[in-house]
Image 1 (spheres, helix red, strand yellow):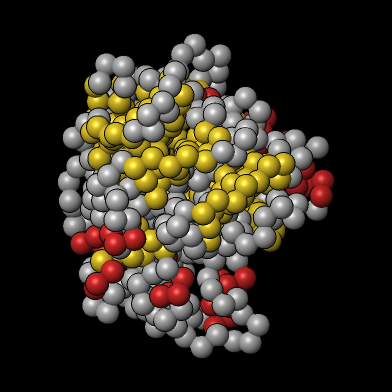
Image 2 (cartoon, rainbow, N blue to C red):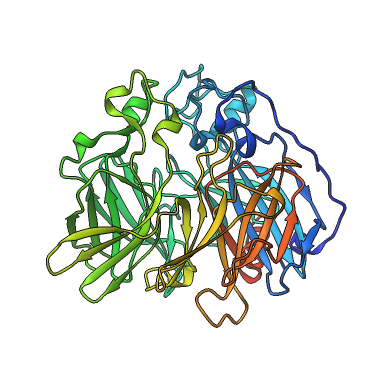
Length: 503
C-alpha cells in the first residue's frame, strides 16, 4: 500500500526563513523573485488564508531555476541556466504540505563535490572550469518541466534525458529513457493525448527532429518518426491537433558548436530562414509532412493549443520579435534583457487546400506561459489562461494573471492581492464533476515582496478575481521558474505505491 501523502499529516512549519546567497550582482535573473534559495525545505499544516476547495486533492509540482553555486560568469548568467529544484505542494482535506528537493543529476554531483560551479553558461556563453575525469561533458540542469507519467515523477531538460524522482520524498532515482526508447534527450513540452493518455513529444538535435509517442499503459515508445527541419532551431514547444503534430521553424537557434567554444549558444539568425518562419505539419497517423510559410521573422515562445476545423488548422500561442543573440554579435553579445522581450498572443491559420498560412494578433496584452484545460488538447478550445508581462520591470517578469475568451475575444486581467507579484505559469485543475471547459481552479505560485517568500494562490478559473479562493503560504521562496503540473490524488497515490513497491 502507498504511504500516506505528506499532505494529510499536519506538523509545525519549519525552515520558514529566507536562505538566499548574495553574490553581489545586479543581474535581474539572480535577484528578487529569481534569487536562488539554497536549502531544501519541507513543512506541514501550512497557513492558509481563505479556504482550499474540498475537491482539490493531489499535488502541484513545479520546477524552479535555482543556481546552487555562484555562476562562473555573473554578468552572462541567464535564467534558463539555473539548477533544477522541484517544489511539491500536497493538498488534501483542505490542508496543505510542502517539500522541495534538488534534482541530483550527475553533473550537479560533480559541482557539489567540487563545492563550486564548473560548467559554463550555454545561453550567453562563459568560461568553463576544469572537469574531473569521468564527469559529464555538459550539464543537465533538469530545470524546465515536471510531471507524473508511467508512475514516475519526471523532470525534464532539453539538453538531456529526464530524471526520475519519487513523487512523495522527491528523492532522485536516476535518468529515464522510456524503457530504452529514447537515447539522448527529449523536449520538456510533452502533450498528453486526452483520448488515450499517451504522451506525445519530440527530440531536437541540431536540424533533426524525432517525433515520439509513448504508451500510457506501459510507458514504452510505440511510434517515432524522423524529419529534417533544415535549421538547428531552438525547438522548445510544439503543439498537436487531433490529426497533426505542429512545429515552427524560426530564426531562433541552439548552437552546441558555439557552446563548446564558450560563446553564446542561443542565436538569432534571420539568414537561416530567408523566406521567414515556416510551420511544419506532420500527420500523426501517416507521418506525411507538409511545410507552410508564414513569412516574417519572429519566434514562438509557448502555445495554448491547436485544433482541426474543416480544411483549416488553427494554432494559438504567443510570439516574440527576437529570441537570442544576433548572429553578428556573438563576440560581443547583447545582454539577455535586450533580446528577451515580452511576447504577445497570436493565432495562426493554415488552409490545407491551398497550403497558405497566415497570422493575426489576438490581443495587445503581453504575457507568457499560456495554458488551457488539458482535456481539450488537440480539440477546439474556448478559454486560455496566462501570466501577464505588461510592464518591463527591472525586478520581475510577470505581473498578473489573465483569462482569454476566444469566442468573445475578451481578456480579463487580475493582479495579486496585497502586493503579490511575479505569478508563475498557471495550472488548470478541473473541478470534481466539472460541467464546462472552465469549471475548475487555477493554481499559481506568487512572490511576496514583503516576506520574500512564495505563496500558492488558488483562483476560480471561470471567475478570475484579485482575491483568490485560497492563499497557501510557503516557508520558502520558489525561485521563478518555468513549468509545472497537477497530479490528482488517484494518480499521485498510485505513483507513490508503485515507487514504494519497487524500492
